[in-house]
Image 1 (spheres, helix red, strand yellow):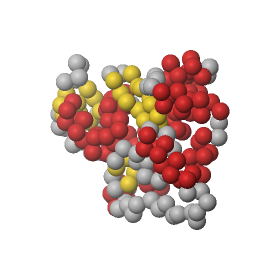
Image 2 (cartoon, one colour; image 1 turned 60 degrees about the vertical axis):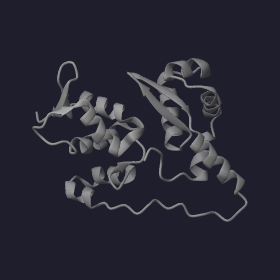
Image 3 (cartoon, helix red, strand yellow; image 1 turned 45 degrees about the vertical axis):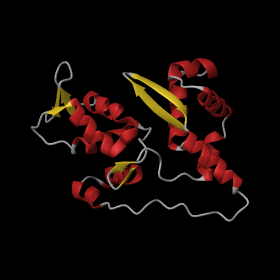
Image 4 (cartoon, helix red, strand yellow; image 1 turned 180 degrees about the horizontal axis):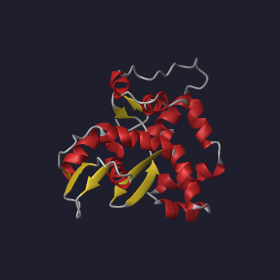
Length: 200
């Protein structure tokens, strides 16, 4: 699952109610951009552009592709098609877009605080990340949970780590792997050959 489960017209309209975001979407429909390139085109700082891109990804308008350490953004045809479909049906009675029923027993089994458990409920369905949160505090909750998917004391190759992370967030498993190491949840052998859970 690589896209947000629940797109609604109000959410999408709210996301596009900004001249800079509209300009960014038009540019991203032409070709891929990095944050730096896009910042230069729309005359905004990179942190501001990153914030806008996070909102546009959450609403389904933008996709992300990793190439090494670089992040390339482009418009999402699936999101644009959904938006056009919603607009074409705007005069009809609104449909109910319900989030799929999720088995949350695994969340309760973690025994985490109510606040952290709610983050998992908000951003996952049946153990799959639907959208990666934009706020760092919530990202850390997701990363802490991802670390529990690895066995303590076991060494993993990079392909093995990728396989595990692809099951929960195929859209950007490389980002997850890097963040798990950067935030100290996983340790990596010098040269990147082996990974293991950090118990320190």
